[in-house]
Length: 142
Image 1 (tube, one colour):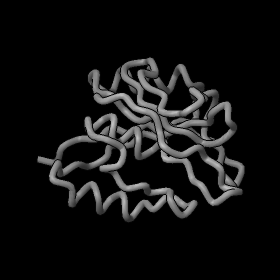
Image 2 (spheres, helix red, strand yellow):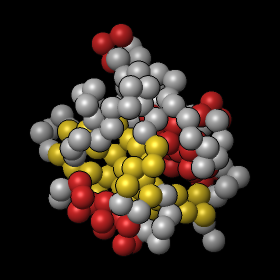
Image 3 (spheres, one colour):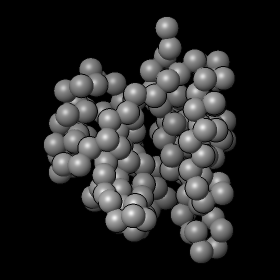
Image 4 (cartoon, rainbow, N blue to C red):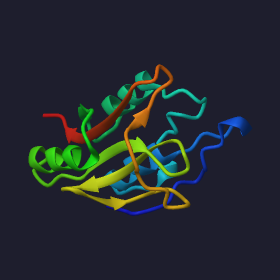
């Protein structure tokens, strides 16, 4: 892993959308964040572009995801038990306050790409009022 900090704070009122997600992808892939597209650049995460990038990337990756609605320690315990030691993306809510992504391994956060080390303090918050955690592993396709 190549630990690094994101390039943009999340300031949607100014038309700037944080790039913690692409930075975490870069960390897992061992590349610079500039080598990974910014899937949130327009303010809405472009899931289709992300899926296409994973498939077309020379690494031939797929994502294995696990949404969770339990306390953070339970989500990370489950990731530790299910992940076989692989690092993963953990999405939640940060102190900034906004949704945020960090790199975790086992039951601990190993890299917070935030420029202010905002961490994860709760589940992601969605416009419809729902809250959840998201765990994502990247796995090479056979």
